[in-house]
Image (cartoon, rainbow, N blue to C red; front, top):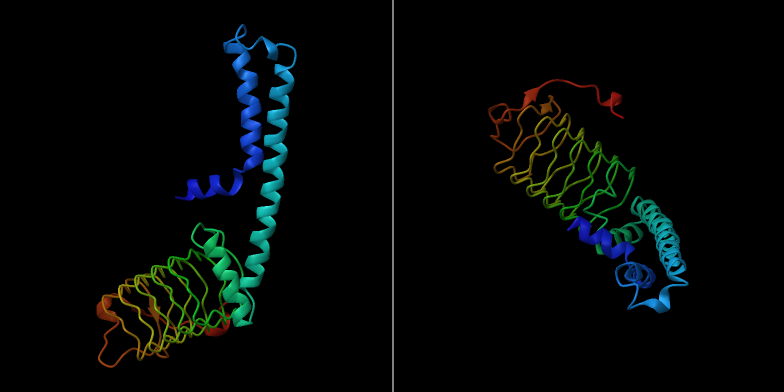
Length: 234
């Protein structure tokens, strides 16, 4: 799917024309008698085809990179409507799930009610952000910093939160069913009213400030009690 998306981004009418020139030029070498009319300029045709391919795709690459940078910047906006539109465009281009948004800085972003299903936000910085009511079903949030963010009522069904930083995150009323929080840091996080059915907590850290649902035994799920100074986060 990713390869197909890349081809669709870079292959256009100019590429088709370039390939046609290359095809005509190469035909002369295989059928010189049949294509004698190309004898005097077949090399020029090949050069034109190669030039169009190089220049056209280089220009396309620069344009796409510029669009990506613009949308990434817009995604980090504290203005909800502005950020949501950027997310919509990123998804339409296939950039929300191909790793384009991973390792990026979205501190203070307002993604409330955002549609982030299967979004690849691996190792991104999303601290102090608003993701309330956001749909993060099967999202890749591995090693992502979400400290002090609001994920109340967010849908994190089967989300990958392995080794994520979740210090003092508000998870109230969030759906963490089958979410993988192994080796994550949950110090001070509020999961008091979250749905934790089949959640994976193996090796995750929590402290006395972490709030679990009534009767929930985090240690039995593999969580480890260990106090961490929240002021050292980031």
